[in-house]
Image 1 (cartoon, rainbow, N blue to C red):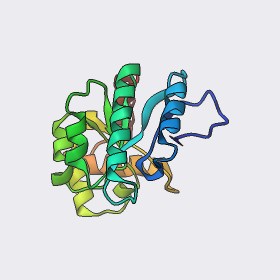
Image 2 (cartoon, rainbow, N blue to C red; image 1 turned 90 degrees about the vertical axis):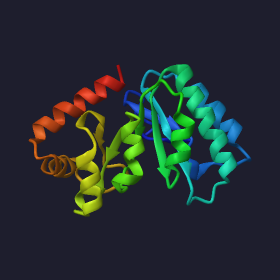
Image 3 (cartoon, rainbow, N blue to C red; image 1 turned 90 degrees about the horizontal axis):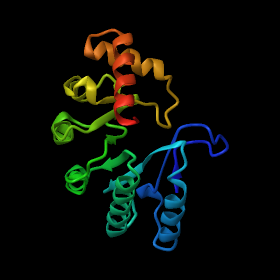
Image 4 (spheres, rainbow, N blue to C red; image 1 turned 60 degrees about the vertical axis):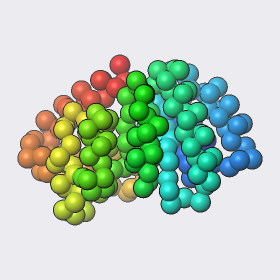
Length: 192
């Protein structure tokens, strides 16, 4: 089970999910049972990362089965989904078609044409170190996403989040304070 936290700090807000990189037919049902048992803890505020990845060696059918399980679990417990998606946007969007809970696509570093259907669906997009590269396509993508659908992250990169906020403010041509206030509101909208 992939956990986005240091398991020793039970008060810290975390997400929990079965990441497509770490799935195995051998123990996936046991992993899912463990996730189901843990997901109701008050400090677990989201399900994920979960999703689909076309470049990992994990079997596609297994990824799809486990992703569907996690979508159902998230809806059952009323917690948002944090999506890992690599070269599988149309497939992920198809699976999310009837989902009523908030969805965050994590680690966005794609061209606008690739993520436009995500934007149009009203889902949230989380950007990280890609904003610091200065690549035109990622700057254009970030600029095109409405601020009320944005999150910022460091993920596993050794990057200061303040640098990402600074870059985001420059791209949007607004102050860092405006970015902070909007992202706080986005957080409150999702994690009521």
